[in-house]
Length: 209
Image 1 (cartoon, rainbow, N blue to C red):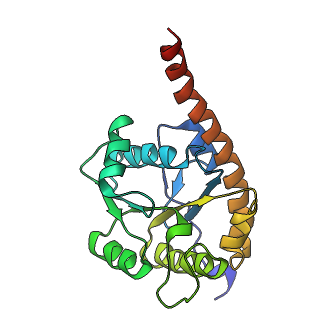
Image 2 (image 1 turned 180 degrees about the horizontal axis):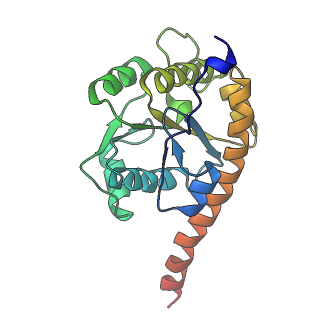
């Protein structure tokens, strides 16, 4: 197809009530995209995405939050502490990629959150969860789901001292996407730090009184 025959149209974006997040994502969350949220363990990635989930449900969107590190009850308790709830927010605790795909097909969400990509494993890949091959295959499969079903996928990636370039490891097979997401990862990490500070400082003040 010639480029002149392609109809151009503006990307549909979902606005949240978090101006910094909207700005990082170029004006809002793009439908059918994949966003890698990276940072050190405990920096606030899961907290941020639970709050983002609540914002998206307010926009009448269906969100599937998949946790490979916590049970459904643990995620529920964390959501209650953050005052996050909604009939369109679904929780699922699973690490098997095939089971995750089946659940996505059943629920048909608008947004999927994978927390974290290091816990997800593909049954056909023999290496352990969190290995380069597992992360790469799982990310590729989730990318296909995002594009084929027009679902926005957020994936959480822990970046340790030994693996500062997780975003490159995860998305090395998607070079163009990698360069776009690398910027988003850096800016979202900064936003997570600010968010954590905003949450922790009032708590510290309360303890000191």
